[in-house]
Length: 261
Length: 171
Image 1 (spheres, rainbow over the protein chains, first blue to last red):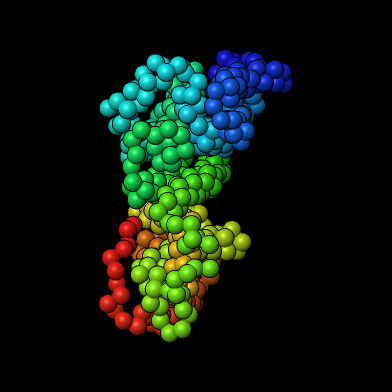
Image 2: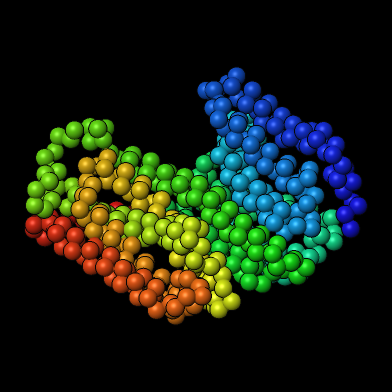
């Protein structure tokens, strides 16, 4: 069942790996170049964050890790953490939407803003919708036959992995406003959703420890779910940190400088 | 240094700390909860390996309660420190109140963990293959001691007059 990916099993995965990485980095670099001619210099750290995000995605989808994730639940969890949590965080922090709006023509930028402000996006950007799509999607994947079916069909595999990334990205930007965010929600609301979503992630991880998905051995399931539990903790700590930091920044806006020293 | 004479350290606070009394209390409480949950994880799960990630007696509701509690504690630990930074830049940080509330939060979490999580929900036990009674006793008595310490410190950190409560608690 794994013959579909001959290019990835060979040790020569590297050229393809680098090519995909380049494919992801070039558009961003070009946009930075264009933006720098018109506006204030685009911060270098955002470019680095984008590159790291791209690296996380490419590493999750091509090369030895992706190959092993097909039959090893632990490696599958590493892919899940990279693609669904780490890459969305890194990419959201690189502010691609701000960059896109800067480089697009005025007409295109207006159109894009109008789309982002539209009703469907308003619903999607609500933290609860994003949390349900993200965490709910995981429950669906692991607690139904979907996980098993995913390894039978390349189409399903692609769709599910696309969903893992997109839902993870939506979740990240719905909770922490790194980038352009037309619809904003209160800190209290976002932190409550984040706490419940993180709880949902922990609950699912322990449930998988107790009841592994069909076809996954006990030891693999135990190691994999602990990876999910603690890995989720680690990356969510960054989300919590930035969410609180933005709160701190906003709370400081009203304070006069004399009081701060 | 601030120009307002608000932060005298003698008996009771009258200025900014008193106004932000509930924020100091909330921040301390969150920090206590976060710290004890973190210590529970590091000491009992990872270093001693007494606690188990899951044991066969774990109930569904136990997994649910543990998930919510730990997720909240994780958030509380981080947010409480940002609250401290916010209070400090407003010259409104009140250490005694904060420490008292921290003990209270830690004690409450410990007691909840010891009674509800370990005993009622059977999430996991303190240790395995030993006589549990002394462990349970020490666990819960230490929780009560933490609570009492917190209450004692808080009783020492009182505002002298109650009327100073301006409604400026914009959360």
